[in-house]
Length: 195
Image 1 (cartoon, one colour):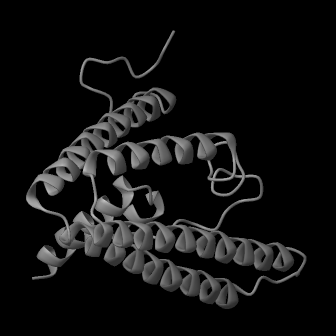
Image 2 (image 1 turned 180 degrees about the vertical axis):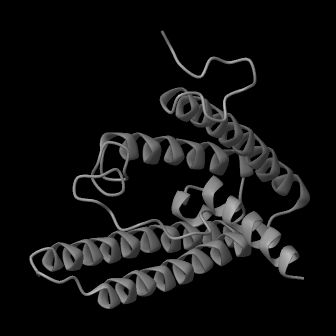
Image 3 (image 1 turned 45 degrees about the vertical axis):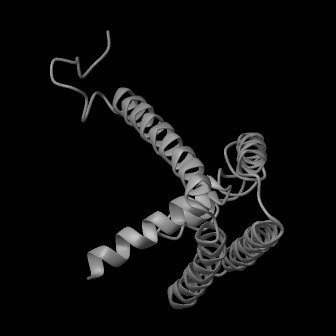
């Protein structure tokens, strides 16, 4: 039963991700953003150049999908509700991460760190993220459930394409990581060191 729930949750998150909610796809909360790191404002984070490109690419995919679906008025309302829910959730997550980052930054000046407070702050963020992911997923599922079979097929095709791109990206990241770490996990026959 728990496995089926995880599969359904992953599917709902994948739908939300395909519609542009990348943050909704992860089942684990990301670590607190390091100062200037990739999470917020860094090169790969949502506020950095890489994150901006990702958001633009997702917006383009959303616009393309929206155009293909030919929604009726009720479906359009559900689409807009899902978009608004996703955007609000994204803003809430950014605010929560900023608050946690600020809290951790203020603790850096203390001679003895309050690890209990840090853990409590991290737990609070995880709970908020879980709620936001669930709200976003539910909004997109409400939209998806209102589609006819032809529209669901269009969404399914977009999901499958997205899954393939994710697998390819994951494979490339694994290869890059293997090369950077001396070939650990590299395919057999590959040299562990480079001349």
